[in-house]
Image 1 (cartoon, rainbow, N blue to C red):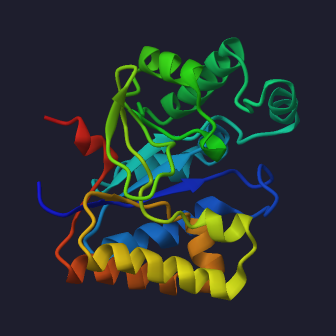
Image 2 (image 1 turned 90 degrees about the horizontal axis):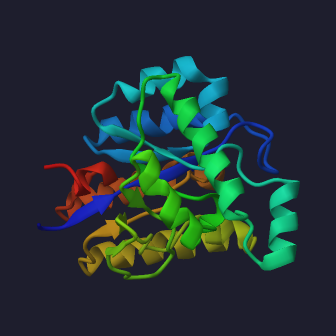
Length: 239
């Protein structure tokens, strides 16, 4: 198999996260950089972002080096906080999840795209998620954040961990510029010692906010220099 890296990132609709930025515009810059390095990427996009910017995502879906994955419909809101307080599971019960996944899939159908990779917002999947996803044709889930973690099989899904340090850890912990350096150096360390396969979490939004994509360039350059092959998650199940 050799040294393989899966570049992944999440994209939300403006207003669905506290940062209130047009993330789809940053995704275009992100993918331009991916193309510059002859790389590939899997972008997990909320259904609402697809629905609101369907022309853009229809255009993006035509690119052979980009896979679109699904990322819940709207990211999490007040009802998810209620679910979390009641039972500690913010993505809710079986019925709620089924309707949310259905709504997300329908948004993608408007651009004639059938995603097979899924990431729950906030990595909040549970057994209900695992049972529902295959009913809608999903074959891959990437919700585990587990350094050096390995790919597993779970409820007919290929379960792919984010096994390099995730960039949102820097944001959630408010580590600032020092945190960005720790993040960059930690991922570079995994590359130097040949961790494989590597699945990254590199949000277009955070790559821009950290240092206007400089860290993103640095990591992609390192993957190229150290002989990694770029793949999309969907290639795990392609024959």
